[in-house]
Length: 626
Image 1 (cartoon, rainbow, N blue to C red):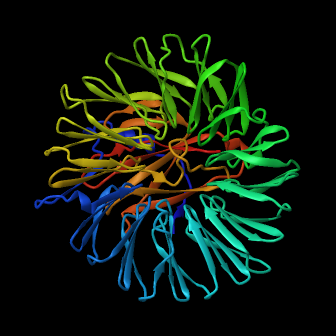
Image 2: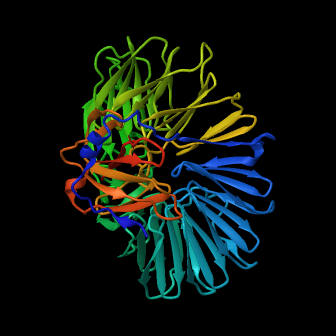
C-alpha cells in the first residue's frame, strides 16, 4: 500500500552543499531504446496515454512513461490486446496480464475459459479494467497496478468509464475510484433502475432517489430526484433540470447543489462545467466548486467554451467565466474574434485591434504590452502566443503575465487541443514552461531543413539532424537522444511519445520524476482541497531520493545538482526508498479540506541519488489545488 507523506525538517540544503563540488548532475535519459536488428514493423507498434507497446512474435514490450523503461512479457500470438491511457490488458487463454504505467510491471490473473472483459473496446480512456469470471469480478486500476477481486451475484449490474466503476448487487451499491482502486459500498433499499458512469461521477437512479458517487472523494451522496427532470452530464458533473428546479452533482467536491430555478436546455458542456438556459439567462454549474454561478448573459448570447473557461460576448462587452473560481469578469469590448481552450480565452476589439486574454486561474482579463501585432494569436489549452515586432510573446495564465521571446524567423508551434506552446528558428527549438513562466530553449541539431515536430496534449517530440528532442508540459524540460538512423514514423501521445526508425523503437517520457493522477492546468484532472494526491517516483534497487515539498520560488542554481525551484526557507523533505519488486516508490499526499488551499500551488522536487550516478535535482512537479 502507498505510504502517507509525513514531512520532517529537511536536510536538502545540507545535502546540496555536500555535493556542491561534485561533477555535473547525471539525470538518466527520458528516452528508452529497443533495438531490433531484423527491423521494426510499424504495424506492430501502438501507443496511448503513458504507454507504448510493441509486439514481436510471442514477446510483448511495454514502455511506461512513469518508470521510463521497457518491460517484456510473453503472450501467445492470439492474445487479445486492449490498451488505454494507463493500462494494457493481454487476454491470453486462462492467464491474463495487465500492465499499469504507474508500476511498470505485468500483473498476471488466472481466469477460466468463461472470463469476459467488460470494458467496451471504444473506451480507451478507461482507468479501471473489469473482468467478470462467473461469480468473481476482477478489477485492475491504472493508478494502482494490482488486481483485486470481489464476489458478485448472477444478477449484478456493472458500469464503468474513465475513472469510476459502479456495481449494483442486490441491496448494495458500490463505487470504485480509479485513484485508490477501492470499492466503496452503500446499502440501499433495492436495485437501481439504471447506472451511469463517466469521468469522476457515477450515478445510480432508484426513484424517487438518485445516488451519486465521486471518484475524487471516494464517497456517496443521495438526494431526491426532481419530478420530471432531464439528466445531462459531462466528465465531472451531472445536472437534473425541470421547468421549475435544478439539482446538480459535482464529482470534484462529492456533493449535490439544489437551485429553485428551472432550465430549458444545456447550451454548453465541458469537463469542468455546464451552462444552462434559464429564466435569468445563461447560468453555469461548476464541478470544481460544486455550485451554480452568476448569470453569464442573456439567453441566445454568443458563448465560446473551453475545459475550464467560457467567453460570452454581447454588444459592447466581453465576459470571462472561470469554472475553477466560479466567478466572472467583464470588460468593455466590441469583439470581432473570440476563442477559448482549456483555461484561457481571447478576444479582439474591433476598433482598436487590441487583444485581451482571460485566465481561468486568475479569474481576470489581462492586456498584452505594446508591440503585439493584430495577427490572430496561437491559442493552446494553457496559454497563447502573440506575434510582436521583435518576436513572440507567451501568456502565462498562472500570474497573468507575458514572457517575450526575441528573435527573427520564429515559427510558432501548438494547437488549442494541446498544452505546449513552442517555436523554432534556424538555430534553436523553444518551448514555454507555464510552471516557471519562462521560455526554455535548446540548440537545434539540423541545418536549413525544418525539424519534424509532433505535439499532442502534454507531449512534444521532434527529430532534427540525427537527434530526437522531447519536451513535457508537466516537466518543463528539454531532453535529447542521438538518433543514428533516419526517422521513420512516430506518435506523440497525451503523456508519452513513441519514435521509430528502421531498427530502433524509442519510448519517451514527458513526465517529471514525481508524477501522479492530478494534471491541471496541463490537462483535465483536477486536484481539489480535501482530496488525496497519489504519486509515484521511479526508484530502482540501490536508489533513493529526498523529496522536497514547498512553495514555488525563482530558480536557484545549485552547483553540481541543477536548479532548485522551491523556497528553501519553507520546504520540508522526506526520504524515499524503492519498494522491492516495484521499481517505483508510491506515496499519498492527503490535503486538508480548507478554503485556504483553493488556488494554491505546491511544488514537489526530488534530490535523486541513483546507483552509479552523481546526485541531481529532478524536475519540478506542481500541484495546483482547487
